[in-house]
Length: 443
Image (cartoon, rainbow, N blue to C red; front, side):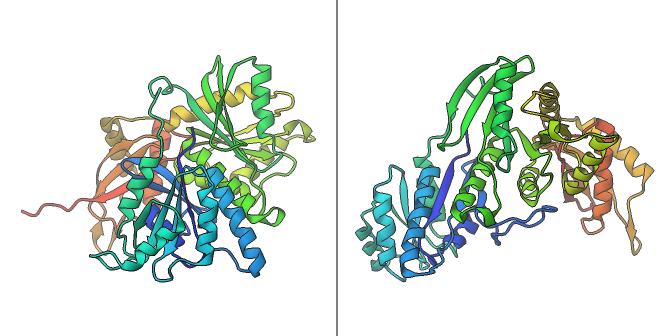
């Protein structure tokens, strides 16, 4: 059920990050623009042949010592092998085959995973450089010439990778009404307890669907609220409290679950409260337009007073200000408190995220909104907003046509977004607005 994963491995300075950036289509590996969220450069989404896959860069290994580097290398590669559907082993044409390359190749030969050897820095077009054939000494047959910097051969690499991936095309009609719900959060916030509470208390029909990782089991749940697949994920811990490679792939598993889900439950411990890790995972879900619910677990352990819940909710609204639309549900997985309420919210946010509006209704709203608050002017030039239409769902995505992108201030864009939310009741889903400029025809 999880999104296919390509892991990029190799020794330092062979161009792994350059290839990673090329695959995800961003010039900078650090993703910017998500409010309140710091992105690191370890993961990204790649679209090819009309499908999405997740790409992971294992990063260069820090040579603390000659002994430590091989230990770290093995650990990184073993985790990559465990997680990935396809492994891309990046080498350097100019440096040739090194002892570190041979060490990696030896490990990959023993793995029961498809491996592609990307011989990087083949920057010249035309005849193959004779040095390329040296890499057959690695004992791996699938060699591909690429230049990550210039893009040469990257399409061939992706074609070869996609041939190794078995995409699930079966039962699409049967699963169309089944909501996929990712349960993500830090360790010990009660993710597994929530799923156990659902299966025990509701006496549901449950079957286990094997995931792509040892610790990820998707649980199929059928009850009076509908059909659901709950995707459990590993806890996301602070890097200071766990070895980096373990933390790194725990985060990757959570990201894969988010990518595959219709609804994301961001679980918090009521006693611990909000942390930066919660913001990081929620920001990734928000950036990808997912329906989101903030679930505060262990609410039974909190001493209540007048206004306790409302004050707690206000504080969370401030911390998650970049996704103020996300509803907050206070539950106790231990006692089963508000589990039914949680199912109601899951169905509600999923329906909101999948809402489609007619073009006529949208333009009636647009006419009223622009009449109520006139578009801004600058140096005698007035912004004109012609019309709008919806082009996608999950999340609801709208295109607004205007005479000038330069005059379209972000505050007016936010105003129109709020008008869409208010008019059509889209209070619990992210909304995406795309501006397009249309020049006026001269006589």
